[in-house]
Image (cartoon, rainbow, N blue to C red):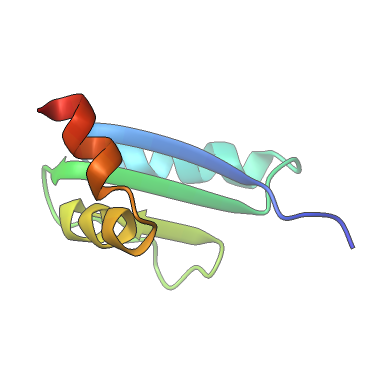
Length: 80
């Protein structure tokens, strides 16, 4: 079994149109198993229509991932 791969896109701000474009890129590529789309400030609520292969992280999701993975000290050192 080969390791899972993901296309990761991080945006400070994005619209549904931007997300849809990256989903299209993901769908056209056979290279990645998943798309992880992280967006700090959504212009509108983003949706991936119940797709198991698309993971959406808003600012709360990003914060939860940072806490879960022990990145608080790392982030604090870089941001101040």
